[in-house]
Image (spheres, one colour):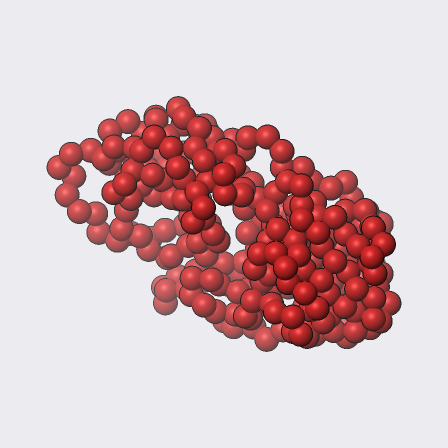
Length: 283
């Protein structure tokens, strides 16, 4: 079985799975799906085992053609769906006949949608994962028209539902943070939670770059040696505008980590678009 990519008109479309933990010592991060909850939900809906590979789609625009009978579902950012031009409800579990085309439109809210296919995408893995790591440049390349994605033939369970309510990402995101190991390296770390930030245009899977009233470094702190980094770490570079690490973050960093987003809240960060507002609150 296979899925053939016929159009990619939105942002980058990447194959992602649960990531490749355990390789930080050789400079390779975990990577994996940016919105882990939406990714896991898609796999459950089509009966896949945890960890199956899917397509992570940024701002819709992906069109695929079924090579054989396949069962699919789209979760995450609620993109409008069409099968051969016929509208289908977001969150529906769909069966496509050979030659039928599924198109993902632009979601009204959120950023990343996940196309799960029953059996999982059976593309070659690297270091035990099929995830595309944009920083390390590991894993399958970004999808382009004409790409053929093989589909596995094994699934864990039967498909038990026919649809789920679509997610909504309207309104300002507010995520919980705890103080980081270098919270004393800025004059008043409470200003991080005392203002509303905006997601900058340069944001990507490596990290969200935030615009707002810059934080001020504490004088005479000297230079910080590089330290281990993790998803959700809030770094403050010399310009005072925080960077929140995403799934493709570097494994070390030399700027002070003044706070860390609670892990359960990092999926919400994956759905923020440039220009969206973001607030923090102490956990």
